[in-house]
Image (cartoon, rainbow, N blue to C red; front, side, top):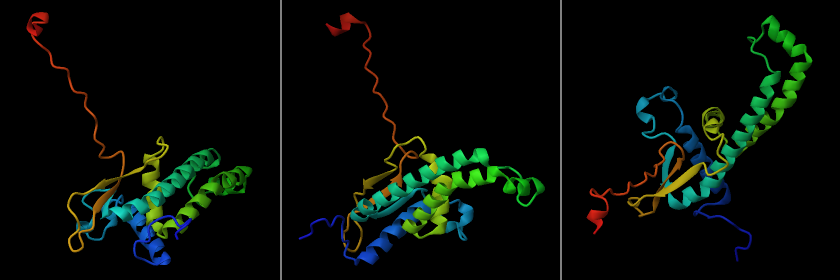
Length: 196
Protein backbone atom coordinates (compact mmCIF):
# COMPACT_ATOMS: atom_id res chain seq x y z
CA UNK A 1 0.00 0.00 0.00
CA UNK A 2 1.09 3.58 -0.68
CA UNK A 3 -0.36 5.36 2.33
CA UNK A 4 1.09 8.89 2.74
CA UNK A 5 3.34 8.46 -0.28
CA UNK A 6 2.30 11.28 -2.54
CA UNK A 7 3.67 12.05 -5.95
CA UNK A 8 4.70 10.02 -8.95
CA UNK A 9 7.63 7.61 -8.91
CA UNK A 10 8.45 8.30 -12.60
CA UNK A 11 10.37 5.00 -12.77
CA UNK A 12 13.29 6.36 -10.74
CA UNK A 13 14.85 6.01 -7.34
CA UNK A 14 14.08 8.81 -4.86
CA UNK A 15 17.45 10.52 -5.34
CA UNK A 16 17.04 10.34 -9.11
CA UNK A 17 13.53 11.82 -8.82
CA UNK A 18 14.83 14.77 -6.80
CA UNK A 19 17.66 15.35 -9.28
CA UNK A 20 15.24 15.21 -12.20
CA UNK A 21 12.87 17.75 -10.66
CA UNK A 22 15.72 20.08 -9.68
CA UNK A 23 17.12 19.97 -13.21
CA UNK A 24 13.72 20.61 -14.81
CA UNK A 25 13.05 23.58 -12.53
CA UNK A 26 16.53 24.99 -13.15
CA UNK A 27 16.10 24.54 -16.89
CA UNK A 28 12.85 26.51 -16.79
CA UNK A 29 14.48 29.41 -14.94
CA UNK A 30 17.58 29.35 -17.15
CA UNK A 31 15.47 29.86 -20.28
CA UNK A 32 14.94 33.43 -19.02
CA UNK A 33 18.63 34.30 -19.41
CA UNK A 34 19.77 36.91 -21.92
CA UNK A 35 21.23 35.76 -25.23
CA UNK A 36 24.63 37.14 -24.14
CA UNK A 37 24.78 34.45 -21.44
CA UNK A 38 25.08 31.71 -24.07
CA UNK A 39 28.45 30.94 -25.64
CA UNK A 40 26.70 29.91 -28.83
CA UNK A 41 23.66 32.07 -29.69
CA UNK A 42 22.13 29.08 -31.47
CA UNK A 43 21.76 27.38 -28.07
CA UNK A 44 19.43 30.10 -26.80
CA UNK A 45 15.82 28.89 -26.43
CA UNK A 46 13.38 29.82 -29.15
CA UNK A 47 10.79 30.90 -26.56
CA UNK A 48 11.84 32.20 -23.15
CA UNK A 49 10.16 30.84 -20.04
CA UNK A 50 9.04 27.57 -21.60
CA UNK A 51 10.18 23.95 -21.53
CA UNK A 52 8.72 20.87 -23.20
CA UNK A 53 8.59 17.68 -21.16
CA UNK A 54 6.17 14.85 -20.44
CA UNK A 55 2.85 15.68 -18.85
CA UNK A 56 3.60 13.70 -15.69
CA UNK A 57 7.00 15.36 -15.17
CA UNK A 58 5.45 18.81 -15.72
CA UNK A 59 2.79 18.10 -13.09
CA UNK A 60 5.46 16.99 -10.61
CA UNK A 61 7.86 19.90 -11.14
CA UNK A 62 5.18 22.61 -11.06
CA UNK A 63 4.87 22.77 -7.22
CA UNK A 64 8.66 23.09 -6.90
CA UNK A 65 8.76 25.98 -9.38
CA UNK A 66 5.84 27.74 -7.68
CA UNK A 67 7.46 27.39 -4.24
CA UNK A 68 10.76 28.82 -5.51
CA UNK A 69 9.02 31.83 -7.06
CA UNK A 70 7.07 32.45 -3.85
CA UNK A 71 10.27 32.42 -1.78
CA UNK A 72 11.98 34.75 -4.27
CA UNK A 73 9.04 37.17 -4.10
CA UNK A 74 9.24 37.25 -0.30
CA UNK A 75 12.97 37.84 -0.53
CA UNK A 76 12.49 40.79 -2.87
CA UNK A 77 10.02 42.37 -0.43
CA UNK A 78 12.57 42.10 2.38
CA UNK A 79 15.36 43.49 0.22
CA UNK A 80 13.22 46.51 -0.64
CA UNK A 81 12.52 47.03 3.07
CA UNK A 82 16.27 46.92 3.78
CA UNK A 83 17.06 49.60 1.18
CA UNK A 84 16.11 52.37 3.63
CA UNK A 85 19.19 51.45 5.71
CA UNK A 86 21.53 50.93 2.75
CA UNK A 87 23.90 53.29 0.97
CA UNK A 88 24.53 54.19 -2.65
CA UNK A 89 28.22 54.92 -2.13
CA UNK A 90 30.80 52.99 -4.12
CA UNK A 91 32.35 50.04 -2.34
CA UNK A 92 35.54 50.86 -0.36
CA UNK A 93 34.98 54.61 -0.68
CA UNK A 94 35.23 56.80 2.43
CA UNK A 95 31.46 57.25 2.61
CA UNK A 96 30.93 53.46 2.32
CA UNK A 97 33.49 52.77 5.07
CA UNK A 98 31.78 55.28 7.36
CA UNK A 99 28.40 53.64 6.65
CA UNK A 100 29.85 50.22 7.42
CA UNK A 101 30.91 51.41 10.90
CA UNK A 102 27.57 53.06 11.65
CA UNK A 103 24.42 51.73 13.29
CA UNK A 104 22.60 51.93 9.94
CA UNK A 105 24.80 49.10 8.69
CA UNK A 106 23.73 46.92 11.62
CA UNK A 107 20.09 47.73 10.87
CA UNK A 108 20.67 46.92 7.20
CA UNK A 109 22.21 43.55 8.08
CA UNK A 110 19.22 42.70 10.31
CA UNK A 111 16.79 43.72 7.60
CA UNK A 112 18.53 41.89 4.74
CA UNK A 113 19.33 38.67 6.65
CA UNK A 114 15.94 37.00 5.95
CA UNK A 115 16.37 37.70 2.22
CA UNK A 116 19.77 36.01 2.25
CA UNK A 117 18.28 33.04 4.10
CA UNK A 118 15.52 32.66 1.52
CA UNK A 119 18.07 32.81 -1.30
CA UNK A 120 20.05 30.03 0.35
CA UNK A 121 16.89 27.94 0.79
CA UNK A 122 16.13 28.22 -2.91
CA UNK A 123 19.74 27.32 -3.73
CA UNK A 124 19.32 24.11 -1.73
CA UNK A 125 16.07 23.37 -3.58
CA UNK A 126 17.49 24.00 -7.07
CA UNK A 127 21.20 23.32 -6.71
CA UNK A 128 22.15 25.77 -9.48
CA UNK A 129 23.55 29.22 -8.69
CA UNK A 130 22.85 30.61 -12.18
CA UNK A 131 19.22 29.53 -12.02
CA UNK A 132 18.84 31.11 -8.56
CA UNK A 133 20.36 34.36 -9.83
CA UNK A 134 17.97 34.48 -12.80
CA UNK A 135 15.02 33.67 -10.53
CA UNK A 136 15.76 36.36 -7.96
CA UNK A 137 16.89 39.07 -10.40
CA UNK A 138 14.46 38.66 -13.31
CA UNK A 139 11.59 36.26 -12.73
CA UNK A 140 10.45 37.09 -9.18
CA UNK A 141 9.90 40.80 -9.83
CA UNK A 142 7.54 39.93 -12.70
CA UNK A 143 5.11 38.22 -10.30
CA UNK A 144 5.09 40.83 -7.50
CA UNK A 145 1.36 41.50 -7.61
CA UNK A 146 0.32 37.90 -8.25
CA UNK A 147 -0.67 35.73 -5.25
CA UNK A 148 0.09 32.40 -6.97
CA UNK A 149 -0.36 30.41 -10.15
CA UNK A 150 2.88 31.47 -11.80
CA UNK A 151 3.01 28.61 -14.33
CA UNK A 152 0.69 26.81 -16.71
CA UNK A 153 0.79 23.35 -18.23
CA UNK A 154 -0.46 22.95 -21.79
CA UNK A 155 -0.84 19.45 -23.17
CA UNK A 156 0.55 18.90 -26.66
CA UNK A 157 -1.43 16.93 -29.21
CA UNK A 158 1.56 15.19 -30.77
CA UNK A 159 3.08 12.45 -28.57
CA UNK A 160 6.79 11.91 -28.08
CA UNK A 161 8.48 9.82 -30.75
CA UNK A 162 9.79 6.49 -29.58
CA UNK A 163 7.51 5.71 -26.66
CA UNK A 164 4.46 7.85 -27.50
CA UNK A 165 4.65 9.63 -24.14
CA UNK A 166 2.22 12.51 -23.66
CA UNK A 167 4.13 15.76 -24.00
CA UNK A 168 3.31 19.07 -22.38
CA UNK A 169 4.61 22.63 -22.23
CA UNK A 170 5.42 24.12 -18.83
CA UNK A 171 5.66 27.90 -19.05
CA UNK A 172 5.36 31.08 -17.02
CA UNK A 173 2.07 32.95 -17.19
CA UNK A 174 1.76 36.62 -18.06
CA UNK A 175 3.89 36.71 -21.20
CA UNK A 176 1.89 34.86 -23.84
CA UNK A 177 -1.55 35.05 -22.27
CA UNK A 178 -4.55 35.02 -24.54
CA UNK A 179 -6.98 37.86 -23.99
CA UNK A 180 -10.67 37.21 -24.21
CA UNK A 181 -12.24 39.55 -26.71
CA UNK A 182 -15.89 40.40 -26.19
CA UNK A 183 -17.98 39.48 -29.17
CA UNK A 184 -19.84 42.47 -30.53
CA UNK A 185 -23.59 42.10 -30.74
CA UNK A 186 -24.83 42.18 -34.33
CA UNK A 187 -26.49 45.41 -35.31
CA UNK A 188 -29.59 45.27 -37.48
CA UNK A 189 -30.27 48.12 -39.79
CA UNK A 190 -33.76 49.46 -39.80
CA UNK A 191 -34.52 48.95 -36.10
CA UNK A 192 -37.84 47.26 -35.19
CA UNK A 193 -39.06 46.99 -38.81
CA UNK A 194 -36.25 44.58 -39.70
CA UNK A 195 -37.09 42.32 -36.74
CA UNK A 196 -40.73 41.84 -37.95
